[in-house]
Length: 203
Ligand SMILES: [Zn+2]
Image 1 (cartoon, rainbow, N blue to C red):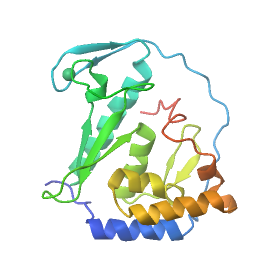
Image 2: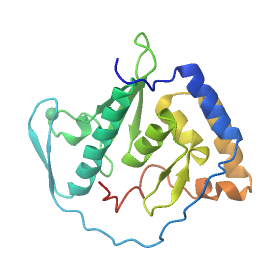
Image 3: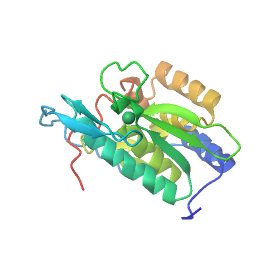
Image 4: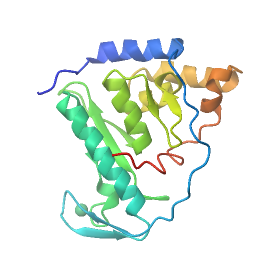
């Protein structure tokens, strides 16, 4: 195991509970509300399992996100976390799932080698949240350079890590029913990653 950041399950659970009950007090950027719509073009995926190529007619954008997701996974692995990215849905030969709109990467994560992997479908946006959570960050920048805090992402973090599932359910319920303006973004958040990182070109 290399790196040194790894936090154990208990500490991460504690941190998630803290995030759920406290308020982010740093600066908030609302970002720019406009973006230039992009027309996705074709892209070719080379499978990491079977090595065969799959052509995706509108794939350049989501394949770009996949490459960035791999970087995040590498970063987490080098910090000692047991995470893997399952890219099977991108390969027409290896995939056995139904694909609704576009292929999704699947995150496998566990906290000790005797446990089974916890599995969830993830987009780049959510992986960035996970990276911030596991490496001690407080927020990420969203698709419009807007601040997305971990405090407003409790359900997403719980879903990816498998930690504090009941607490996160209660939190989400409370947030969706309540009228706390802090959580406006959660009430209007779409499921999945529809709005994620459309113009994410920072290298
Ligand atoms: Zn394959």
